[in-house]
Image (cartoon, rainbow, N blue to C red; front, top):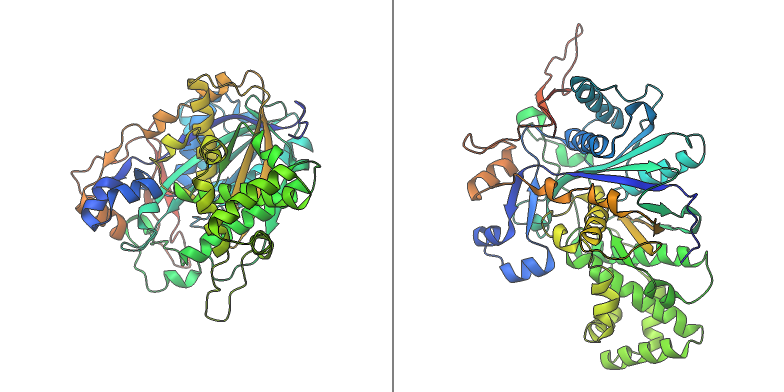
Length: 496
């Protein structure tokens, strides 16, 4: 795909941590009156919720500890620890809190702390913050940190109001990645990557005004419910994905469809099961449209067939793709961005090629991801981790095969990262142990779910999280002599 060389920096190891509290979506449908079959097909099977004594920093630190343990990392070699999140609870610091928690656990285990000269940046751009942190880590390794290691952790808590369309797409968890100059899983070609960004004022947002009037729950917890417009947000996701791919294709010559067809697999930001499928199918139609306009007879014939079935003029379809998502008006959403493309996509789904191009490219790890819900910044790396381990477990030949990583963050921005699987990748993939992250689940009933969602507490009969790093209490002092108001104190309860 890109002629990636093994001298490129990339990913050597991954570790996943999710909290134990689980909501089964079939059961949830029974509480809420939703259709279980539709929910499974569109969203997934379950989602996780953070416990009363967990926050984004404990989730992140627990994932990092698992990574250090499973990859045999010498903490003194780590020169870069970045946090990607949109669930921060401190506007001054972020990754350094994760660093402090990790150091506490390492010292408790008789191990050295992270290096004192370790950089600790935090990256925020909705669900794309983790990808930006990943790019920062790769740049660190290729510049001043080539003889060091970098750790990037994406962690988030996705909450939606009960009764909202987003409620079944909640989730919580973290994924940590070990980056090295000579990686053992994937090399990533930043020079051939594509970026896109555009301000979308009424897309998914988290203005501070949402917190006004809230009474903090246990451990200072506030409900972090987003402001979002679902259909418009979906159009923004599709549009940003297409523009990032355009930027990637601008850095290479040749057929767009051939490039996409040659990929071994694709991993995307995954808020729920159906969303990446739609966006990737649109990406394929956009590639067909490009190649058709360049005189590719096969692309012209295939695209004309889909458009004829949908009763859409090819020129109108191409023009709609080029226009993309309209800007919002004042106090108003724009009209749907892709009505014609939606009709063409419906025709494409009925074609035999859909199974290979869409379902085939997005197959690896998809089953495991049905259990997690939306992890915001951690959704994409979680899918990457699940997919690589799935491939290793089923002896899928990925040696020297090209992979595409597509990140997205509302608002909107997207990244298209070409990657290549390195020879000998299977050992590092098997070490991910994705199933361990799903173990020891505590299924919530309707009452326990409502209590945890609304007040951040759980009934005493529910088994709490009892390992890893947890919140002990939150400071309440706010006077001239001593202040710790809102600052969390933590405890370490053994390996997560």
